[in-house]
Length: 123
Image (tube, rainbow, N blue to C red; front, top):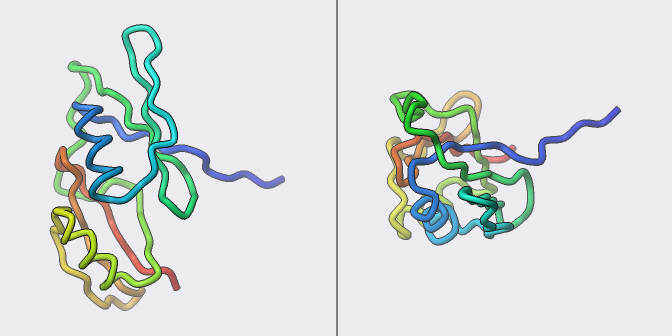
C-alpha cells in the first residue's frame, strides 16, 4: 500500500493576505480559490508540484498557532542559499540565515501571520 500527502492545512487569520504571501512572495501556484457558502477554500502548491497547503480561515475561539517554534511543515530547496536570496528579495522574513548543520543546510522563515517554517536543502 502506498500512501502520500496531498494537502496540509495551515490555519490563518486573513486568507487573502495569506494567499498573496504564498503566491507572490513564496512563488506558489494558486490551485483553488473558491467560495462555498460563507466560507472560502484556498489551496496553494509549490510550482514544481507536491503537497498543497490549504489556507483555512481560523476561528476566533481557536488558540493562536503562531509561536516561537516552527510548524511541522518543512520545505526544501535544491539550493538553499540561492532560494534564501530569492525569497528574501521578495520580502520573505527569515528568522535564521542559511546555516550548514550536521544534517544539512537549514534556515527558518516567517509567513505574513508570523507562523515559522523550516527551509532545508534537498540531499
